[in-house]
Image (tube, rainbow, N blue to C red; front, side, top):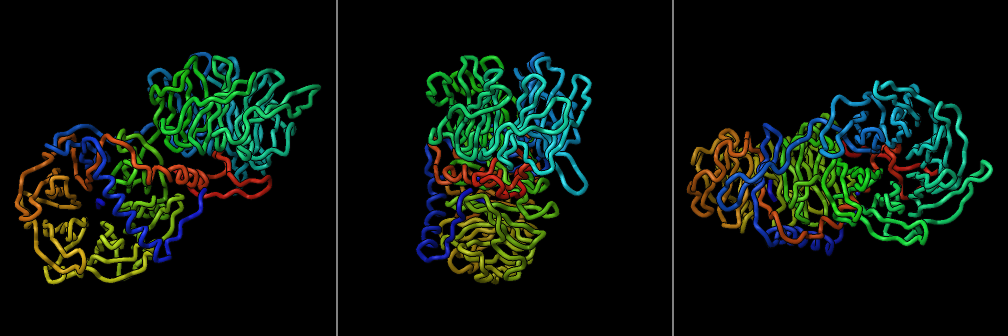
Length: 624
């Protein structure tokens, strides 16, 4: 169990297969070779947490991943109420609007609105009494883009109007007029705050997104399809193009959010480059404000609250704060995160992948900070299927065992899911643990009692590597798999043992850890530490036990029962908590994030990179 739109890789050639095998080895070696102190991550199934322990003495360090159960899911838009400075966040995937204390990040239940359909961008009027927002309207079996008003403090909601073919991305309020960008139609529409039919004020745009009035008669439009920000001027009731404020090639890929800084410059978020830049409206000079690597993951809506810049990090499911110089000052609001209740796996790039069975989702966290980086939903096809184990290779591919569909899924470097090991292939039934072997092939523990080998290139069945008799060593009941040196080590759950097999042939070598040795009770996963010793989760005794690699002799509880709240440990992995990040997986993070957004419905306010106007955008389920 230990070890976002780009074209998919194809590894069918022999040379590419060799490269893939090498990448797996390099990925593992890089993880082990990083500078800095290492830690042990243990997934605590019963409370849905990932706990961090010192790899030297097993002492508890921190709760590395702690699920958030109250708040938004995918921040489609943010707004700061002018009267009290509170932060309002549109929870696109749960259909709510949540309120936070901007200074403390404290969530203020109950929600300001519930029962919405994909709410996204929002704007307050000057009095703070009316919040205008975008959310779909159900019309029979179909949904339409809609505009709504939320009256505060009572929370009365009014639907102002709907549009049957538009895809509203952003909203701006000017007096009694609402301006809305239609990313699908490539237009800018104007509505009265009392509703009614729209007036088209600008057409021919390429995926328009964020809007910002810089004066009564000057409007900026983030044209995401061309990577530009355009300025329009109104004269005699007609809006005309004035100039390009931000040109393509300014390191802003997919401009979306626009906000006016206290110094008069305009802040622009790049959804696909994960940056924020500043534009001087006088000289049009562009300067970096928030660089990539500052925790932004598909930044969208921007708002300035006094001298603090608030950014909706959509795929990261947070609202982050930066000072006037672009220095990160913290997370103002953190959205819901899924319980960590299935498995975890380190990945190149100092990242940790965590599978959530209850949410059918994969979350990727920064290994140095525990910050949620991105999420991949529908890990096992539908809500009726659940992931069990997860493993990553060195090329950005992530593999998930799915017991209820008797197969293994793969998310490639673009974030696109495919069936890797077909249902029942080679007799696979309710797959459990996964591991890549030294030959680059994928090995899968089957609940039938076998360990099966599949091509690491295309997932085709190769052979029964260990049969239900344990290749002569007795029934195995395999769960966790771990290759180490020239052996494959397998946890046998009900015999409460760890067995060793030859990594090349699968021949039975020995029962390394005898049944129940040291109180081992319910071993699910195992890993070898940098000291060469073997570490095994003991689910029923809520501990991690340590054994000599050569003799299997019990060396004591490495993580004491219940330490740090450990409750039913399911999986464990060693990682490094400091040192330089490895770019292998980090370099493809943007591609995965883009793909995760493309899979969202057009109503999420995410702009396709391949519009032209009138061309159908890709849709697919994204983060939950």
